Image (cartoon, rainbow, N blue to C red; front, side, top):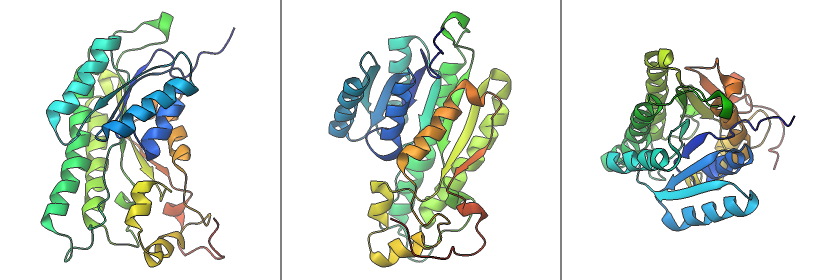
Length: 277
């Protein structure tokens, strides 16, 4: 008998699905049999991702919906679309976020940059979590299809919520600390409803988001020199961790700060040797 795919028949939402970790997670989810509702503020890029998923994974079910996660009504509409199309929501990956190039220290970060960052990175996760809970509370177990009650919510935080960043990014760091605290509390509040919450904490990843922020050789090397493996992580390495947190492989994992950072959090001193490309 063929083994069941880890996300077979599960209805999954990914925000920020048009690039980086969201894009790679869309591919990994599709490979595991998920039904995908993908959202992003970049409608053109999102449409390309949906077509790419359908081409690479024949028979997969994917749909794209434009969404600004700082707008609650748009987040609600994404969740309701997934439920109306497939009857339930099993996985919510609150991945959308920003790291603004003008984000800096306490003196130099402008209030508009602070407010924009909190609105997307914190409110967006709150809205996604809120409407995921509303939907997941209605899920009924269907053992024949490998579906249970409740669901899994994965919120993207960061290693900088746990340790200080070498390059100032105060608004971003504060927002990710808020995501960690919010995720822990949600995990406790909803545990008896079989709705799990975990925070993915990526280390520095080679994505457009980070590379745009580390926009000078000095910034780039200041961050890279601290990495124990001498390299930035790749988005697919995060996506594979998200599959684990979304699936029943992690059924007893709840309320964690799930660090996928190449060991950075455990590094006391800068690793020796030249950076590895």
